[in-house]
Image 1 (spheres, rainbow, N blue to C red):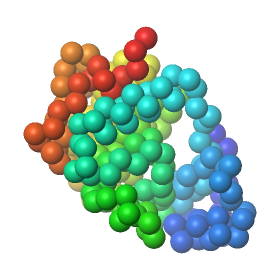
Image 2: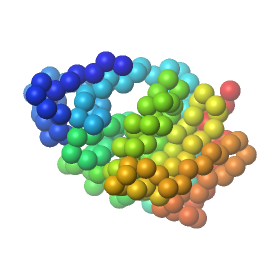
Image 3: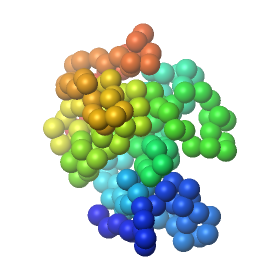
Image 4: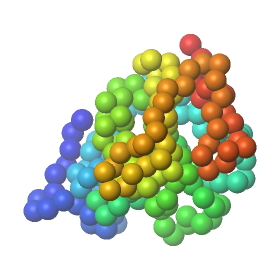
Length: 189
């Protein structure tokens, strides 16, 4: 993936959004800020798009109005990162984010095919460091869900990881009474 490196230092979130305000980056630019570097995002394959839709619908049905579901929108993950996770379950209502992007999340989800290595390493560390309560990778390559819980902000690692397969149900850390079927999160073949 192509990157746009800063001229003298890492981009901050503030500087990144100035590029948007100045028209240097526009709505058609599929990029995100990761660790101070502007990174191009891959185009959506049909499987990736279907995976996002399946997982978002399953989470929206499960969570209801207890949280807001955001799809491929900015999440502020520290001073130098503004990723666009495929799905973010964030506290509050949609209107809470009219003037500011969320900087806390109950659950972030990445649907992974070509991005699997980046989602397991870069995004997992970034989200743990940001204190995200829980992170799931919808792994399209291996047809499973990779679950990361109990973030350690300092080390940017997760204390708990596990794999979930078809036939299982997952509860959300933020809402233990809410469960989602793995079958509903993964696209049908």
